[in-house]
Length: 94
Image (cartoon, rainbow, N blue to C red; front, side):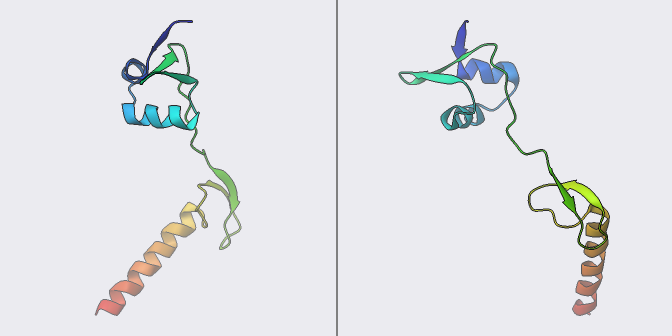
């Protein structure tokens, strides 16, 4: 197990250093602080902790889709709603 600095780890993985510091502080990386320097195992995988999506049901059409936490409508219904809203906005501007 050889350790490298978090700066070197970020350079090797093509990540931003501030992002790596944030992950280390949040405990998302198996890193340790030695004085003012963060050290990490050079073979530690960089895990992306973001959500990949949630199964949802569109209230307009009832189709199942995978969306983010805030998504309400399926992509097709969302496009249609955006078209309708844009048309209403243009109509009000006249």
